[in-house]
Length: 506
Image 1 (cartoon, rainbow, N blue to C red):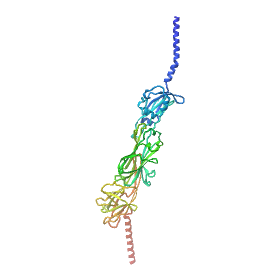
Image 2 (cartoon, rainbow, N blue to C red; image 1 turned 90 degrees about the vertical axis):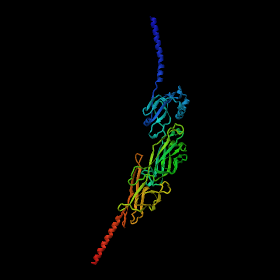
Image 3 (cartoon, helix red, strand yellow; image 1 turned 60 degrees about the vertical axis):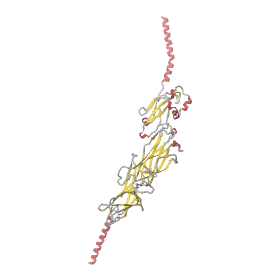
Image 4 (cartoon, rainbow, N blue to C red; image 1 turned 90 degrees about the horizontal axis):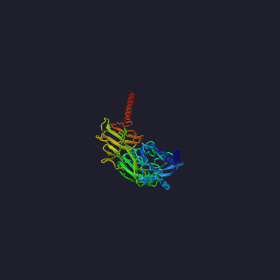
């Protein structure tokens, strides 16, 4: 019995010693399998809701006190499922995330996390993680993919800082400095007013932000998408520049004489223009145009809400890691407006009936204005333009008849004009000259999608009355009042003379 107890005790002692010897190994195994985790998240709330980022574990490692990863092993997403220790030489080559990802994307393993509007962060162990922007949702497509990113996670949480190149575009129209919109620079602004047929300029500006990641693009193409209202006729492209450097390597679909509609101007690669765009740059297109007889016009009552609205948008490369020209996105449209004005006239007698045979001429200073007559409309005429309706005549004197005693002068700029009756109907006296004044305040409103116009006018809607006999009509000046006063004075003088003679006789 004693021998049996001794054998049992010996077995228990051996078991205890074996268990004691196993404790360090168990502790070591626990230490290697229980690794501290950290959060990886997207820097901005906007990106977390509009973009989808997939996270791939390329390497894992153990951070030292300085945060440097040691004992680096292949991660679960490494191409081909490779495992084991990573040679130091390989670690030095993988730091360029774009080149590495392009070379290995086809064989990369499954992602370990997807960050989007639902999942904004993930827990990860220390290591190297490739982050790919795989999808975005943006209004009107005005957005860009982020370049490939390699994120290191060591002793702390890590943040994904998206890197995207997103340009903007602006359109302006040139006005005379004296009557340009408030705050305009040298006459350039979002609104202007011009005569029909007068040449003026539009300016399109693509703003390329400063970004070192342009190098990620094989090419960086951009296209201006310009749309003109029906009342605007394209003339020619005056200049295309990046900074102070002229650009000649571009293509355009614009055609001289095109009235309204859309056209494009494309630059195949903004990186190849001889200017370092990583510091930011502006590409500026200036072109000439004029208002034609289809332009929307306004008079003193500024009736209607239609305007000569013109727009531009910019199509740009939006995926730095795509091949060739890659994928594209388009900015929202930017707007400008061009105004022109009209004068409405109605020729009648004192009984408000049409008067035949009267003729009127419009003057600027001492110079008669040439007009293009179509029916009862007289358009401001420029002999260098050809887009006037067929069947009209170039005139300076506007004629009225019994059938059409109303006549409209269309397409005037702001300014002061004089309307003179240069042909007087038989049996009538000449009307007084009429001073026409047009003054306008216009600008883009707060919505940036429409314009406000305020007109201050004098005699832009005239009822011109021809009177018979020796009395002149009233058309905005003293009119018949002067002649009533003069007549009264003459009558009074006659009475005084008559009374004086009677007193002398007495």
